[in-house]
Image 1 (cartoon, each protein chain N blue to C red):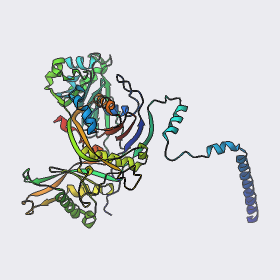
Image 2 (cartoon, chains in turn purple, yellow):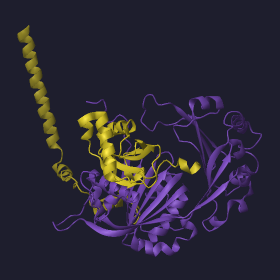
Image 3 (tube, rainbow over the protein chains, first blue to last red):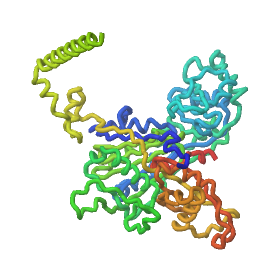
Image 4 (cartoon, each protein chain N blue to C red):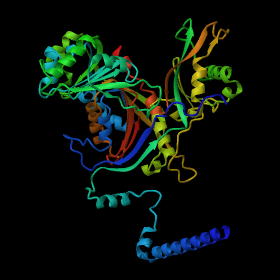
Length: 359
Length: 189
């Protein structure tokens, strides 16, 4: 009637998984391939991390919140690509064995002319067509996440492993990059950097003290402590058996409830007296056996949130600490990553986990 | 000619029926116990014990991690918006902005753009904070809501002190779990 087609933009999907966690998890070396551990590793650059947990569980964890593992360390600096592949910075952060940094440049993937990232020594340049052609570097077309849509500008990704022995000054392949960084991609951009080689205990030490090369680039250190929000009398759906969620509708309903709880929406509070004219949302019920059974319980919840560059290591660290305290309780973790990706993980009693991955 | 054709057609039919019968006979000759084994269909709701037993066949460790179910959720029901109200000249910070005011401004934006049809679009207010509103609308109406809301200017009334007001769409998402996060570009600022 109004020329608004039902699905004009491709609908983003959400992958829902119910997993049984392994009975034994090695603290020193947690699994990487099974969910939810693979989910944590799937997003290298997260910007918002939040955790939702019952107040009883928060009370147990509270004393540990001052520990390094709950503090998010990252720094912001201004540098060009030439700065990365030259002098001290290159030697200290990329070439030295054992060094491992995560870096992300300003810009939105898929929109801005050039977005750069550095992970595991691999420098990735995501470029639009014009910039890519001027660079003279060999790259691959970026896989179209939207399923081969028409009228979407093609983009290219150039990837190079800077840790390779061939990536040193004077080698032919390397001088191509030097040329491109000197003549085309020569602007100074804002970067976020987190040093993964620092263990959580060393995290308190500022990067200037340990590693001088960063100081030249007007670096600014951030140590983000969790912001705790106490939410009183939240209506929590009772979920005795997670197999109840095997229907898509129910999986979506629980995801919606978690999303609203993470937003701290008054709609999930007990005694929310909003008129149905303004909102018709009601907390879903899953395990209603009898008529008197409300299907929800009222609990106090706490939301912890961090806003800053979070590595998979940080998120995994949070999970590994919290899972020790879980017992019969549940914990939900919501992560928003750069590039519009994200996931929600809900775990309970060390046994099972639900994973929603937004694509 | 026609008679001949029909007769050949008839023989062909008879042949085909014969073959069909033979094929059927062939099928019936296959051992029955196998068929009966295959008959019981797996139960609709999956029992974890059954899953574990099938994993045991794959020689997996019983204590290992296992994926019990997997779905691709396509949404399809709701779209969520994070809207922000702006006014020009800027209103004092203490100005009150409640759910009913927000709903009124949304309704007038929708009515101006799509008339009665727009007015009928159900809008659920999820959260209010300062000048920001989070709403939920049916996915089919999402494009209409976005167009109506971003193209609307209102106000210039006594209630608004003669200010011009409008909506800014900050975020739009099919999944509310991702909505509260933003795009993270503020970290670079």
